Length: 254
Image (cartoon, rainbow, N blue to C red):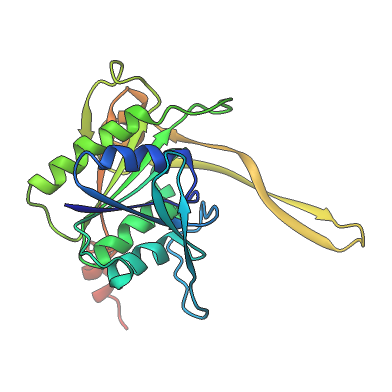
């Protein structure tokens, strides 16, 4: 099996290294990731300039490829022929923060996995629900090992090829993790605030800031599972059609 590992935090991020090392236990791994951080970039794709790729060395001495494009660009490059061998699975991550609820629309981690599915290859996005204001290095080991279990299961089973798996892992040890739950998207609560400031020339500029988002820990949801110590696996579909609205709107007098 040939696995493409990517992320949105940059090719040298420690979460990507942990993920790549664990995926090597399943098969051949190619790493192709952005050369800088693209967090909250969403499903960006570069169409109006050339993309450049260079070889870099990861912290464990293995070779990787870095692109100046977005996470989705990296996946597209890999699937369209930059990698000479056919890719069987794309795994994106490990993001240092959870991607809960509506986060998936912003997340470069998740949309990289979506790009894989668009290209006809199974895609998994892996995110770590790390503690707020955590200091020091994060331990990505348990999340990487959970990702390996999920990748093994996905490749051994039959599932609609249009499905993307969004995985969120609590920041717990292997022994503390209570298991894996299949979940739905939960409700993310954003507390964004617009900060208006003046530069030294008295011209206005703006920051979108605010307090860190929270989430509602409803049973059966991604955040509900993570808050109870379970790994959350949420199957996402790219078809965003609100089917229940179609007959209602068809009845309108257009």
